[in-house]
Every structure is written in structure tokens, then in C-alpha cells.
Length: 401
Image 1: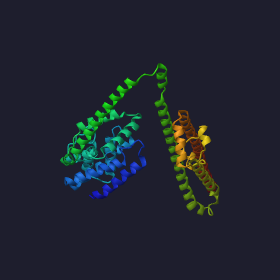
Image 2: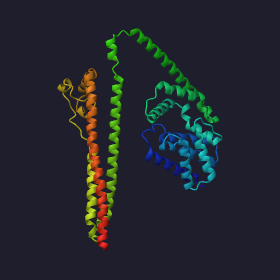
Image 3: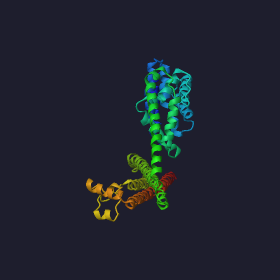
Image 4: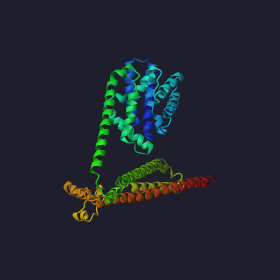
């Protein structure tokens, strides 16, 4: 069997799946991680001089091992194994090879318990980063992904403790990985333990300093109780939500533009040439063209940027009437003037919070305009396409009669 051809199809299929279905929450378990695992799985397999069958099994399992994340984190190994089996069966891969690929994927479930050399290779490739120089960077990505999936912040200390526990309990299964990765893994573990100790000492020192310097009166304490961090969190979350909604509106606009552009292209290239002999289709065709054109115009207007003058005056700063957090208010200004304005804003709490409020309000106004135009585009497209289809049907019936 031509495993190379099948493996090429596997790679393209997995790349397409991540391209089409990848969630913004998958900061770590994405195509980049899959390519990383596949690369190291192949290197380890070549070291052991695996047979052609076994080499294909290891590589196919490495490519498919995390596609299950695209439909949710729960039981992603089983989902990945099912998707792999379905794809390989469609390419006439023998059943015993498919079973072996599924076994390798399922063996990556934590805690890993691989039974065969093939499974050991895939498991070691999956956690290859534990003994690599980029361990810290990948650990940060995993934490960010875990926070997005859980919908809440995970304290750095808690994440560090879990990572130390993982590194302490983990062991590489192949001699190859033990020889080249174990030393660096132990160094990574030592660094984490040192960070934990340093953080604990810093915390104790901060607590001691706080106890020594706490001389505020009851009025001062009440003032300090104001939820500054809560306010900042509110601004950050609101801004992020507005940005996500704006991205969603832009994506919807692009979909409408692409869809209607395709319809226009088809109608202009095929149907218009036949109207001379099918005059009864002129009205429905014009209706369809008009609907597509109006929809495209509304979608373009929804994504069309509006940029302000890009400058502010000293009077604006003194009256606290300018939002320096939006580039449209300063992109024509010199760096010195902008720095002066920013320092004035950062030194004035009311000015700073006022700017944040104005920034949120401006985002909301832009979002309102975008979604209003997108609603109009969708309404035109929905009712227009129905009317066009009905017109085509009526035209055909009248001619037939």
C-alpha cells in the first residue's frame, strides 16, 4: 500500500480541519502543536528503524491525536480516534492498521500507559516539550488555553504547583527520549521549584511589610476598600467583549460579501448570456442581481472604517475631553505631544477612567452601527433570495403553460 500518499492526504485533511474549525480557545492544542508532535514522532520512529507499517501508524496517530479538541475537550482522545478511523477507512487502509492508529491515539490519555513501542513513541512526542528549551513558553500557552476553556483565571501559583506535580510524576517511555530529554526536564522542574520558593518568600516579605506599615485610619481603610481592581477588570472584560463582537460582525460581513460575490459571478458569467433566448427570466435575474448588490453594499458599509482627524489640542487635555486610548485621536500628533497627554491622563484618575468610559462608549457606538448594517444586509439577503427564487419559479411555470 502507498502509505506516503495516504499520509499526504492525512496531513492535508488535518490541516484543513484546523483551518476551518479551529476555536479561538485552542491556543495550545492547535495545528502548530500537532505539527510539533508529528515532527518529533517521525524523528523518534526513524531512530528505531520502524517498519513501513509501523512508521505510518506512528505518523498518522501523531497527526490525528488532538483533532478531537475541535469538538470539545471532553473525551477528545476518543473523538480523535474515531475521526482517524473514519478517514483511514475511506482510503482503504487495512483494519489492523486502523486499530493500531487508534490505540496510539488513545494511549495519549493522561496518565499515559502505552503498551507498545509505537504507543510509547506517540506518547513521548506528545509531551516532548517537557524536556525542551521552550517548555516555559508552551506551559504559558497551556495555561492561557485552560483559562479560556474554564472561563476563569487560573492563579499562577496553582498552575505552577500542578506543573511541578506533572513533571515529578512523568517519565519518558522510550530510551531515546530519556537520553536526550530527561536532563532538561529535570532542569525545568528545578526552575519551577525555585520559582515557587522565591514566590513564597516574596509573599511573606510583602505580608510582613504590609503589617509593619499599616497605619491608615478607618476612613482611609474604607477608601482603600473601593474595588479598583474590580473596576479595571470590568473595563478589560467589556473591551474584550466588544472586540470579540466586532470580530464576529466582520466575519459575518466577509461571509455575506463572499457568498453574494459568488452568486453575482455565476449569474453574470452564465445566466445573463442566456437571457436573450429566455426573456421570461429577465425580471427574476434582475431581482437576484439587485439583492446581491444591495447585500454586498450593506456588508461593505459595516466593515468600512471611519477614522477621526487624528489630533488633539492642549485645551482638550485640560478639559479632559479627548480619549487618548484610541489611535484615531492622536495618529497625526508628534510623539512628544502624545507622551505629554498620556502622562497627564495617567496622573489624573478621573481623566483616566473618563477616557476608558469614552473608549467603551465609542466601541459600543461602532458596534451598534455595524450590527445595524449587518441586520439590514441579512434581511435583504433573506427576503430577497426567497423573492428571487419564487420569481424564477413563477417565470418558468408561466412559460411552461
